[in-house]
Length: 207
Picture 1: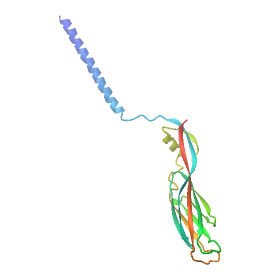
Picture 2 (picture 1 turned 90 degrees about the horizontal axis):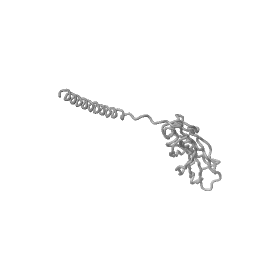
Picture 3 (picture 1 turned 135 degrees about the vertical axis):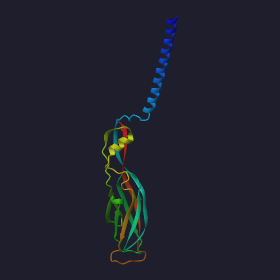
Picture 4 (picture 1 turned 120 degrees about the vertical axis):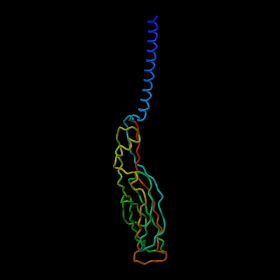
């Protein structure tokens, strides 16, 4: 009788011991899972074909009157992103009563933070001034990245600034008198400044 009872008790101890190991193992597994879930694995890299293209857009310019024998400063705001060129188209109408000759008009254009400048005469038919912004379009290339956004950033590198050229530009209109230096009633000009920009935009597609 004793050996049977002892054998039964021994099986009972073994069963409880087994359960204890399973429970302890489950607890260890749960704790381990909670610790590992705090740090996500890095995203897998893949190849992207990144291409850049040029585009144009027209912006709001300015207009008004400028007196002769004076310099009038006009501010225009350039908006956008990844700008490479800013184009100013300047025209004017002489308001002098019965003028014999048009006044001499010179325009000087200055960008914000030294981004670009231009100067030149504006004839009666108008003139275009193209100011280059030091923001070169990146080359098309294939890069490895975790997402399209990262691929674009890597392809653009540090050579471009999306905000370069944006902000307030100044157009100084130096208006002289007509030939002979005689001022007549209405000695002003009515000027118009049309504004356009060249910019680039990129896209990334899985290779």
